[in-house]
Image 1 (spheres, rainbow, N blue to C red):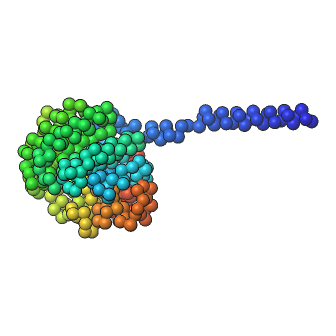
Image 2: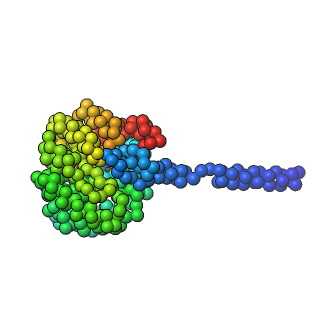
Image 3: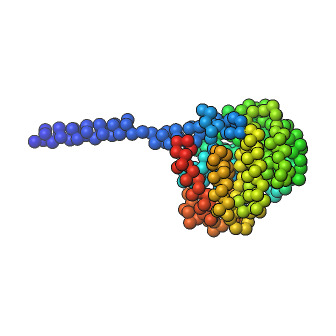
Amino acid sequence: MKRRRVWQRIVSLLLVFVMVFTVAVIQPDVDAFAAAKTPLATHGRLAVKGADLVDAKGRKFQLRGVSTHGINWDVGYPYVNKAAFQTLRDDWGANAVRLAMYTSEYNGYCSGGNQLALRKQIYKGVKCATELGMYVIIDWHILNDGNPMTQLAQAKSFFAMMAKNFRKQNNIIYEICNEPNGCSWTSIKSYAAQVIKVIRKYDKNGIIVVGTPTWSQLGSDGTHNEVADSPIRGYRNIMYSLHFYANEWSHNKYLPAKLAYARKKGIAVMVTEYGMSAASGGGGISAANMKKWFARLDKYNISYFCWSLSNKNESCSLLSYKTRKTSKWKTSELSAAGRYIRSAYRARRKALGSKA
């Protein structure tokens, strides 16, 4: 009897060993499986082909992203973290983020801000996005400075560092002047040519987005199309920014036609910033106009980045001003705009399926 019990124990232990070994061998590596399905792993390095953004296989591709608020301030930098970006990727259906760094405003890169600390925020944001297999825009956030030529020397130095540091990565997009204003396209082109040259010294293929006149509205007013009529020549993978706010009447009146004209001329456009509110960031939001914009942009696979991942008390913020969490938000912790955008991004990801 004792011998039988001993053998029973030995057999039982062998069975347990076999089961554990089988699970260890057959069970897939969940982290590796998840990593293989990231946007970057699926689509690789992006490029510009005519008026379209395409992936490494030459297929038309659309970035659906979220922009931080200014990383110079406490309404922006707390959300530059991996858990926040993962929430955007996994729960919202975003595949990209935009790191907005103001240049001339309070604590701006060119107005007394701690440049080393700001660069560290950029590096942190890029690292988080890269580890999650997301694309990332480095945004030189020209706004109150108006003419980007004002900050030319600083911009050349900054983008030389960025391009040199990230030249081997496939997920970096350089946005070299957020919203030029009060200056001509000729001036912006001169600035862009010099900054592009600096970037291309180190990064030969990265996407570069050039801001356009009148707060990135593709021209000096509602009827002028000087960007599409006179684009930058001599470089590959150049795109042009269009910004709109869905509750701004002039944006809804003039910008759809300007976008259509740019595409007709073969100009690649990226919406590096949009919101559901008025251009001020305040006022009400317009779901009706936003729905029209999404339909328009999705039709042509035009990429877009929503402003902004913040709990600042304004209509365009994606989080409720009462929300203190910096990631893993419940829908009740989002603003009205945040709930709408999250729902739209999730629906778009579902519609695209494997192409997302």
